Image (cartoon, rainbow, N blue to C red):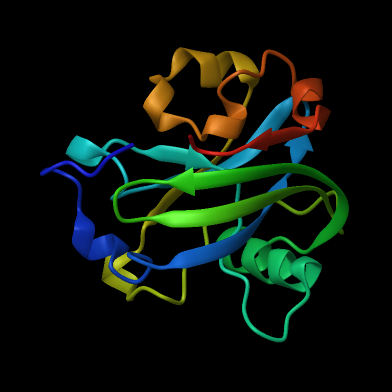
Length: 168
């Protein structure tokens, strides 16, 4: 996913030209995955749908980071389960090693609400929406709008098939 002239690089400046480690959570509810739409990654304002997660900070465990990121982005307190996927995310300006874990809500009745990212001002948030999307809905989206780890799934059970994906 190379940078393009219409990509909003000002939104991504906090993450550009550095390597990040990103724990991410896969939460399934009634056959759908909880995903966050991000702006600024694709041309023409198109959303990029990815599981909640974010930057690992010094002093945190991976599980602590994932619980914090989930709380910031979705308002949910989660229990972190098994490790599922390792993915190298790479564009011309962004690079991250992403680790995906199964997560479950601590309170099954709690509903996710779009949160904020503390790295961005209120008027410059990159998260624009939260939604539970089924595999059928993901397949219907343009491929570049769906995180690569989720592009091939045809059933919610497919996220439990471990993947190791590294850029060539």
